[in-house]
Image (cartoon, rainbow, N blue to C red; front, side, top):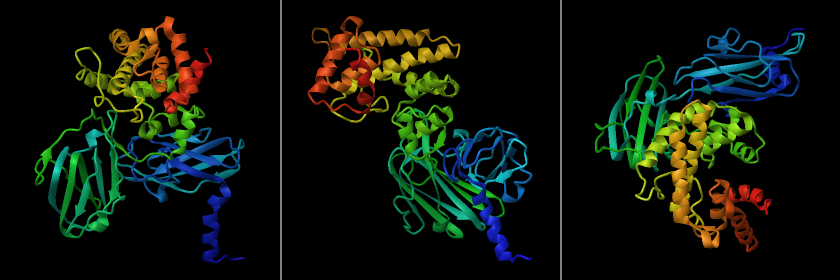
Length: 445
């Protein structure tokens, strides 16, 4: 019996459905368009058990049978971590094959896809500028893509040609962080024309942008913000910025699972949470280490943590404390959080954790330990009322923060816990931090 081409096509297209392999993700995202690391993590789900899996990554669909980028070999589980260095600004395709213990029953997944963007600050050529700036440029050949990369601490307004303003919402707004400068990327090919073009960016906050013109012949032109743009003012970010990192983030349900403590997989916990969680990275790195023993995040972020504390040290007041605005506000802007008290407490705790991280990495952390001890004394002198067993304004969140960080004097600890209990009985509504941590102290009453 001879099958028609249409029947054959339908049969082939449905093979992936029969395989039972799905939910294919790169960096926990479905077909992401801007991966910011050269060694991304791939994951999938299978409706049936298997003994081994093979993962193939190629530069085109046709090459997946003999992958030109990466092949995993035999692996178990449903995750793979590429050890191949990918190239920025390229498309990649991947596929999973599973086998039973005898190697006879083979199942093949659908073909997944992802694209790479900027990997690091070394890949970015733009300068941070502000004001209402513009630049003219030419589209010399037939375009395949026109990718606009933008990072800003504010909400830049962008026009391309004859006031063809980009639609609001097409460009996600990302904020500065002392740990990474997030960028957004959007394909703006439809806004451009062959020949002369003009881009206008208005931003009161520092902004860095690059427009990558990717031509069909494989060549590329890059238009980057710099001091030569018309009306440009050189501007520095308010925070200590690291490498450019993509603002693409996994779904928010990851954060919910992290907060519930239901995920112990360090691959999920690390950068996924750093991108969108309000968990401070110092604390997150410590949680990961305590739960899993994994030191990878500590190793990679240690230099950034070190530079961050140096920067904060430049803003110390004569009494050794720091004020609001000198560190990222990890906590909700609520009246229950006195800014000077909160900022100094986190400054203390970050130094305490850095002493711990130094020991884990075999480094000398005595300076951080001494700094933490000095800050603890200053917090107690300035913010603890011994006669009333309270920190600062005595609010539930304030007391919880002190207990959680171990700031309460040992001979006053029970009294502080009792005060916290009384605050909650009176109807105090603590923030998420207070909710997560208060119960462990109330059990000590």
